[in-house]
Image (tube, helix red, strand yellow):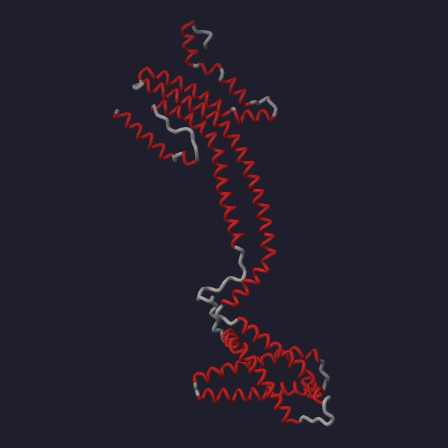
Length: 403
């Protein structure tokens, strides 16, 4: 087309379509189709977008220069055109620097993430190692500060189990002989011990329950209830002394006989010593822990529930929890990851968007004589929403019409 024209027309056409002389070569060079793979990737990353923006700017500049003939404020428009090219140059340089900045930030973020993972694993190992000690401390704190007498509660259960074990061991021969005489078959001790232990455990627990009820009715001064519970307590005393504590005293007779030649304890002194043992055991255990542990145990059995609270009426401390230092470390790491991800996103998208925005500014300058974007972009917040951009163009258009 240029060769077929005469000299003047050829010069005019060459000026109007001068990008045709180099745009194909520029695009071919930036595309790097026949280059080695690494060179091709580097060209497409660093050169392709700037080359396309520059070519677009050249074409739009030609259109802008043509419209200068009938535009108002030509001097201001020409200056704005030069400023647009200046913004284009800064955007290209910022694009190249932004790529290097993104690579640097990415490497720093990887190193920081690797550090967080290592320290997190080490902190988790420490949490696992020290968790038993923290568990013991929290259990102790819960037991001490709770409104429920947990120490008395567990001591009461332990004492009942201990009494049941002792009486099971003492009374097993008597129970085996009794059932063997009834059934006519010789029963093994191992067959009898488990059900006998459960039975005796219920008897011991019931003994403390009756004693607790006796104390309550005495406090309330309920005469009829006192008489009724007194009868029940007497029966309980008789059953435990005759069937349990008597056997315990009988097991001690050989020890008494070692210190006398003709030793006969007799039924009276056997039952008397058994009664004193019962009274002593019940008194010591009751005043030490059972007076507080038995009501809590009865509340659980009766389904009334326990009101577990701290010393100041607050909720009881958690038994299993993670240390505050570990949770604070996780929180700080999450904040660091969030901030670093925003920085990486900004360093990734801002450099190419600067070049695109500079190219768009050429088009808006041609149409409205105004720049749409204010360059350079410092942060992601500088990239305005589409609605804000459209409103800004509408306001600029109204101002131009008024002027």
